[in-house]
Length: 189
Image (cartoon, rainbow, N blue to C red; front, top):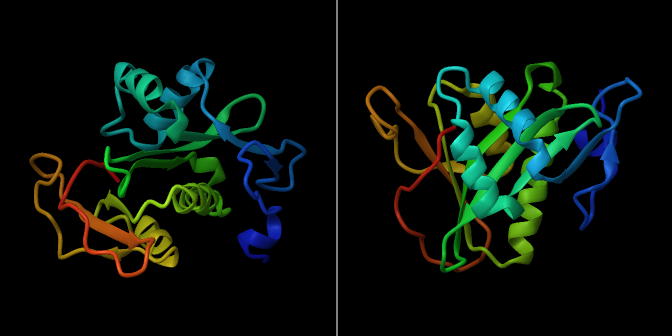
């Protein structure tokens, strides 16, 4: 089996190039979100996070405020994943608030492709640190983030997102010689 970088063409600086997710004839395109994507974005979010999906109004507000920070995977008929990332006002730290790939597309390296594109953008912007939260029991996500160089900061943060919502905070430094960034912040993993 080929590694993701061999199955998909290098995306380079553009995020609207097509690549194939599997052997079907429908290529997936990674691109920025549009207002027309909101119903599909909501569907994917509900599928991937059935116990705690974003309400429509939250996704709407993320689009309005951070629309340039949401990348989606589109096959021309529906969305199959997205990543939402926001940078602090000082430009030094970025939080990945949500990474989602639909169940029928998992295991094909798509989450990694989304994250690699985010990291490319953040490096160009000279962001110093990327942070995210993840459920301590989500082994697949933890392995993905570790494969990208993220490391857990401390142990499990109990009730981080509310009662019973424990999280690991994972951090990736993008700059050399940079001091630690601010402490815990948003995210859901």
